[in-house]
Length: 323
Image (cartoon, rainbow, N blue to C red; front, top):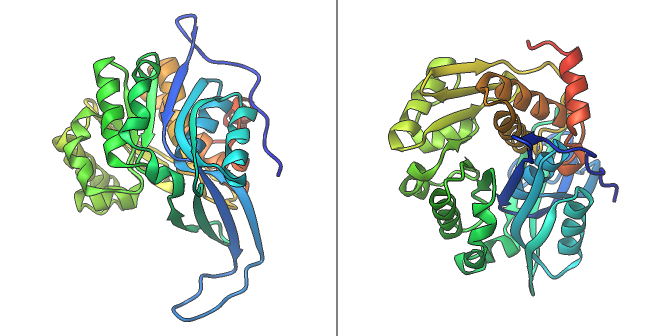
C-alpha cells in the first residue's frame, strides 16, 4: 500500500510548534468504486476495491500533520493486520501514536461506495472504536492539556467525547468538534465546544433546518449557537463553507476542481481551518485555506492517500481563483 510521506516542516505559534491532539477514530476504508449504486435486491459489479487508511479522527490527524503541525493521536485499533497498518500510516506522517491502544478484536472499518462522479456513501463498522471508553482516556488528561487545539469527532463513544471536552475546558484548550455521524445526545455537551463543524446534512439533522442557501445556513448556525456552540462552520461541499460567529455569517465559496472522490474532504477542511486559524487568527483566511485543502482532497481517490501537504495547498492557492 502506498502511503504519502509526511511534510518536512512545522507551523509555529509565538515561536512554538503548533501542537494538535486528535481524539478519535481509526478505520480501514474498503473503497468500492461503482458506476451506480444498486437498488433494493439488485447486485452490481464494482470496478475496483482498495483498502486505504481512514477514520475521521485519523484523517484529521494526517491532514494536520501534512499541514505542518505536531500531532498526537489518541484512539484504539484491533490487534490485527488492519490495526497495524493504520498505526504505521500515522507514524509515516510523524504522528505520535504512543496513545493508540490495541485490543484483541477487529479494527474499525468503513465501507466506502464511490460513484464515478466522486460522490460517496459510507457504512461504518466501528470495531475497536466502540471500545474507546473514558477509562482509556482518563490517564491522558495532561496530553490534552498541553495542546494548542483538540480535534474530536463522533465515531467514538459519546462518554469519551464528553470527557475530552471536560479535560480541554479545564485546561482552556479550544475544541473543534466534527459532529459526524450526527447524534442528538450531543446537545448535552455542545456548550463545551468552541467550534462545531457539521456538513449540510448533519446541520439539518441537528437543527431541523435545511441548508440549501445562506439563509438556511444562518438559521441552522443560529440554532447551534442557541444550543451553546460558540463558533459554527457548516461545510457545503463544492459550494464551500459558511462560518457563523459573533461577527455574523460569512460564506466562503468553493474552488472549481474535477472531483474524483469526496472521501475525507470534510476532515481535510477541518484540519486546514484549524491550522490556519491558529496561525493567523483570521477566520476569512482560515476558511479559504480550509476550502482549498478540502477541494484538493477530492481530486484523488481514497481518504489519507488523497490529503495534500502544505506545499500542495500553497501552490493550489497561488493558481486557483474561488468560483
